Length: 227
Ligand SMILES: *Cc1c(COP(=O)(O)O)cnc(C)c1O
Image (cartoon, rainbow, N blue to C red; front, top):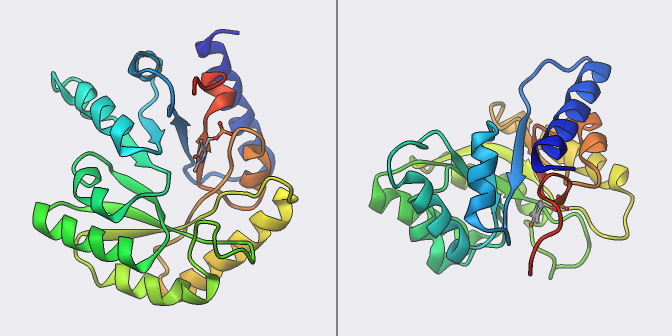
């Protein structure tokens, strides 16, 4: 199958699922282009893709710069989905529209400082840790509301909602249910933070059943990554 065919197939599955669920709210399908050359992202752009996901500044920065070079692709949105070192915050806020992986207070502080210094604004998701393993990325659910109020009081940050990365040996439905519950809890204090970033190549249709609004899809569209 060609890239265009894989993209069309994923999009038609998303549309069919949304129709079956009776959902009419907007869903953002992000194509995760990490570990692929920028040419693939350019090809996707030609096919109409405007939302791209990356997980390393060293790779995302040059891709975003090349896109912006001649001013022709200013409508592309770069979503940072990977663990972000605080010392990269200053760079990432210059090209990313959305950071999905705000997972600790030190990163939040760095983003607040970086957006203030740049006089720029960025959208953020708070990444939640659904496991008991503190080494897995993500905010402990107990900390979620405290982090959310910190985001809400930062002029450069807009809180979209919660994000989660599913575990490998876990039933995705159990995790999506927990994410949906945390989203409800967040919305009781921050009604506009209603978005849910969840669902990848293997489980995006299930994620839609649990209210995902931002799907991060890599290999199902791009094919295998070159590491
Ligand atoms: C790589 C990545 C994805 C995409 O994964 P696929 O299984 O290829 O769809 C989604 N989210 C995050 C955080 C990733 O790092």
